[in-house]
Amino acid sequence: MKFGIIKERKNPPDRRVVFTPTELQRLQKEHPEAIIKVESSDIRFFKDEEYSNLGIEVTDDISDCDVFFGVKEVPVVALIPNKKYFFFSHTIKKQPHNQKLLRAILDKKIDLYDHETIVDKNYKRLIGFGRYAGIVGAYNGMRAFGIKFELFTLPKAETLSGKDELITRLKRQTLPPIKIVLTGHGKVGMGAKEILDGMKIKEVSIENYLTKIYSEPVYTQIDVLDYNKRKDGKPSTKQDFYQNPTQYTSDFGRFTKVSDIFMAGHFYGNDAPVILTREMLLAPDNKIKVVADISCDVDGPIACTIKASTIADPFFGYLPTEDKEVPYSHPAAIVVMSVDNLPCELPKDASEGFGEMFMEHVIPAFFNGDKDGILARAKVTENGELTQRFRYLQEYVNAKVEVLP
Picture 1 (spheres, one colour):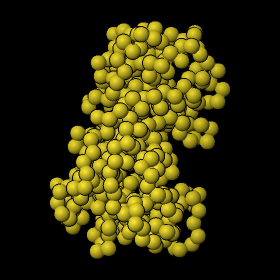
Picture 2 (cartoon, one colour):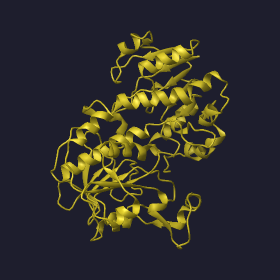
Picture 3 (cartoon, helix red, strand yellow):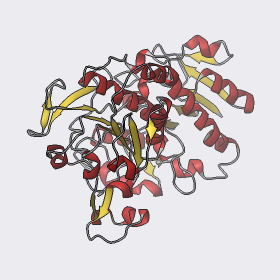
């Protein structure tokens, strides 16, 4: 089995990599029968010599490899027919801009394994950068608060060495007694929680958060049933919510009345209710002034997320009265952070964490006959066709024009 680490070719450049030099060294040690090659790159965080110094071959041509590992979408012209590829294809939700990519993958008879489709037997995701999105997103949320109220100025996360330095910089700041509401208990939400806990911000119960006044900064972490309720007032369960999302409406308004910062780290499913509505932001008793939308679903559950922002320009202002973007310095503006590639700001940490997960959950499947079905479940295409799990994409592939999800 020949494994190849491909150079990232998507713009803007992404400095992350699936395997760090030390993780590839570990792979070689645990599976000496594997042949590993790294495509030379002047982009990734880890330099070519860091791989070659550990005895890993670095070359301009890795076309003889069987399996290719990358992070972002591979340009159509760079795809090699009849190979196996692992990368984030951004096609499984019928994303219009990548329809041609999926068509090309099928035409070239490539076996595609999307990082998002790597799941366990219960279809729970095993691989992702979500934790690092949460870490950077929470940092950026606090950075936005400091800028909005001219309290402090923090450097961009990408200029710092990693999570520990982010926390060190944050702990130096003096915060007023603000309240922060955090949605989500998955990898993204828990990553954001790492930052808030690292800052020593006190976590309080939902009831106390909604009713008590504090003399120090506090936060509360809420789940789907905390910010959604059944329209008919009947008792609700998570299972009922996931099965009948259209029967629910947002109950997030009670948090807007007391929160200064909203950090959105939730997963948003199809047909689920809008969480933060424009009406809530227009309400006279709305207190939210900063929204760090880490999940970044544009025109989705967060009314003020009208676009994805960028690492270069992470903040913009949203004016609820006119439903439009304005400078974040506007007195009536809500500052929004909606960067959609947050882990890119911590390429070292994110790559290290990703490689550890990949070594634990995916690599063994290549050498144990895929006894747990990891590869079988993750495979999106095979021999020019969609696999059974992803047949729902056929209409998307066949459409003469690019279609919306």
